[in-house]
Length: 323
Picture 1 (spheres, one colour):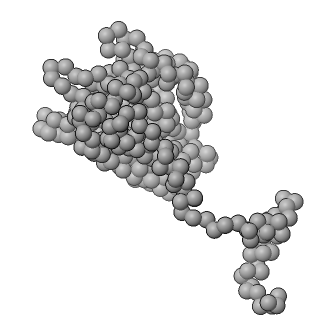
Picture 2 (cartoon, rainbow, N blue to C red; picture 1 turned 90 degrees about the vertical axis):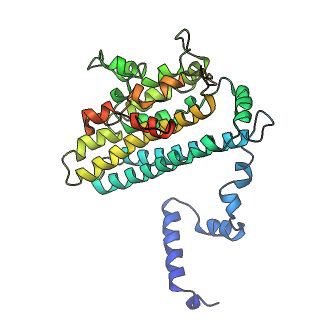
Picture 3 (tube, rainbow, N blue to C red; picture 1 turned 180 degrees about the horizontal axis):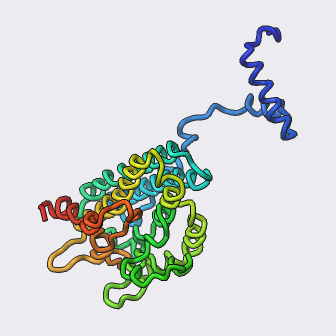
């Protein structure tokens, strides 16, 4: 083949590659040799499918334990997708309103999938199998999802995650280290009888405490709420942004939480008393939003809306009746 027979587009790409690798002192021919000898990429190699399918390691012989494991792995991957969107916003400096809204909509779409997918847990496992294999999981708990706590820290100002009881006496100059000790979810992993920290919580703190404190400081001024307050509270696109933020708030703090609650009622509710969760978590008080009233964006809701936070959902979706 003559040089003149080579497509001009190919020559153009070769020149650009030469400039790219030359700028970093690399040899283009070596990279072309690597491309020449490399095998074609396959779908299964690209997503590491064979490895992925071996990541489920049940502790028992009950088949439905695989459902439990796979579902939680899928949820953690969705959490990673959410965090990728949040991270891009936090690192973008001053984002434009269109980009901010676009990423908010992506986050909401992921949360919608998470909330609707929980039917896999509610109706997708045999209750007797679940009640049997769950005892082999002690003291682990879905409470120990570090990614979800990072999502909360990236979503809102730290003071909005403080337990309601503590907010009354919250010092205006409390720093991140003090606020971290007062986050609402800590009370969800205390022993029901004594109020002491469960092993579940102690394990969780040992693994993530430093990471959470680092994240609280890192996202102090770049969490979603801080970005909105700094750049968009008076923007022309304010109404659309408020709608998206409210949707995220409700999906994360009502929909997602109550999807868990619905599953807990399905498997753990037993009159006259409830079956304890695997980590000893106080799920009856921790999961219902009407008790915690964790709200990412309180200024975007009316007092009546905050007072009714999640209440109607519980009656309709969990107990299948109106208030």
